[in-house]
Length: 372
Ligand code: DGJ
Image (cartoon, rainbow, N blue to C red; front, side, top):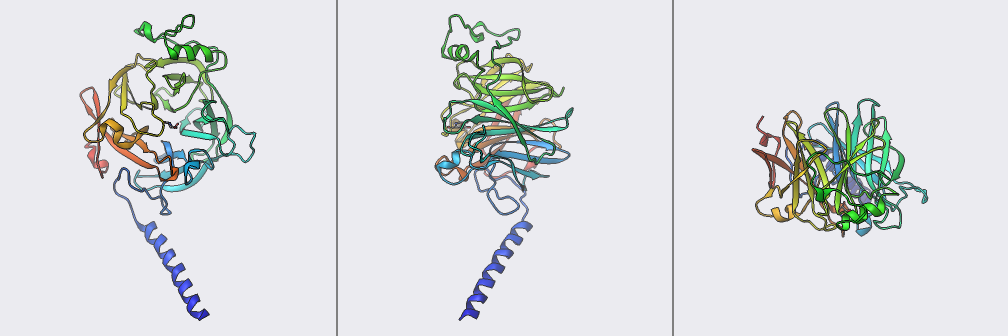
């Protein structure tokens, strides 16, 4: 009898090993938005609200590691990193920035740590990670930015600090900025001006965010501020570890979240979303001929069935396509707030029609859609 049990157990272990071996041999050759995306271990990729940085021909995808259930909407593990050379097949590189077991830490286990974005600083040769941070047990009240740094893309990242950006600083106004977009602290013209003024001494609120590095090596932090009513685009210091105090406000009072920036032929583009919690809403895009604006609201880039709700997703990053200059991939999250770990990834090609961008749903696609 026990021999028989041993045989069955042995057979099961062998099958399991064979399964993972077979998986390791499988190669993805396309993107399947909304489906399970397995990593090199056969596990659904766990990098939500993420972004991708390229370094020496390798792509590193960083995102929120979520666990099962609603508790997964808080940071129980940290920021997960994956690497890939072709964007279809991803190797699990582990947790790049773990949350802390020290409950007095800003990044204590159970805090809210969202939308991590990593950029490489060519001058300091460091990888810098910025993220939206909410302190443990304080809901979404803290509205801080956190920053961490590493010598290698995969980390480990060392947490440096978290704070609200640009205390005591007034916005910079590019030529052509409409008066209605200028903050009036004396007599706030709208709710957003009021929140700006309220937060002037302690620093501006910073929630959904991204980081963009321009061709000249300057980096910018773009975040939902003023109780999510208005976006700020703020210059980072040359080491990318702090804010210089120079910033603009974008689309004042219109509640833009989930910003993702990119640049093509000298023109700046930004895709974002409205503000409806985990539920999807129409995407929105903006255009500017200077990083300092003015940024023009251009409407919803999505087309076809599902376009009104961004096909169930929310923007997180726009990725330049490897080897195809001027082509970009729109990356979005399909959140599953009741079982956070089951969130899905919607990646779709961005098309340019004259000076307009459009996004269309595809069940399955690969990089050959980009002709060049
Ligand atoms: C929408 C944001 O885009 C997400 O990152 C997250 O903060 C949720 N809201 C929380 O409801």
